[in-house]
Length: 257
Image (cartoon, rainbow, N blue to C red; front, side, top):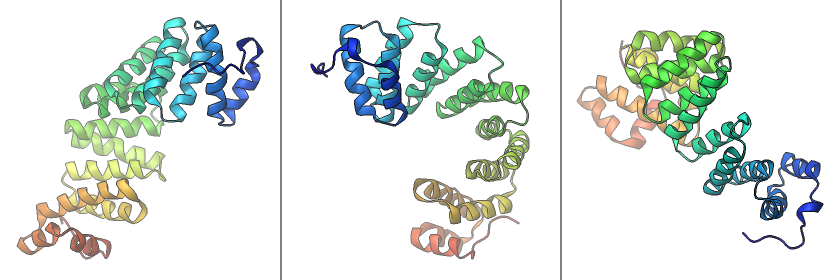
């Protein structure tokens, strides 16, 4: 992007720039930071604000580049590294994001939010054992942290620890009763623990509340679980998507004892 000649870096009001970001005027932020960076490439704060606006606009490749520039210019500034981790996570680079959150957590072990973020990214990166380690650190810091308990439950489900997963997911659901993600984790844990009837009932309750891809995911889990218990007629029902959806929504289907 070329520099807007109508904007002089010396005329940029930093407070006005931050206010533009705060009110969501990201195009104005890009316009002003374009001029700032063109004249002062070493302006780390300008790179940061530009990265944040680019992230908000979904321009993740550019956001990562400017977040990396901010980190390079001031490697000790924590918020730049946190921003970089958030950009990497948004772009699906979960291993790199986890490494960044892990670096932040090691530098300040008392900050549980970074432990939780690392755990989440480890799970998304198919590194559940490392996710368990990060989540356990967060839980030790604050057992009442529902997000930490949730990520621990999700990681334990993926490592096959049924007992631990049920315990952590039950705690997460108690701490976050309005969070469908916690209830889904509890259903997953119960399924792993062979409490299939309870898991199936929870999937059905969630399907009544969720929409779009979240609902599709839960219904798919319920369909797989039902097929495990069904006879030939049930497998026929499970094999016909619209028929299964109708019977599932009406509460006609059951799984387990």
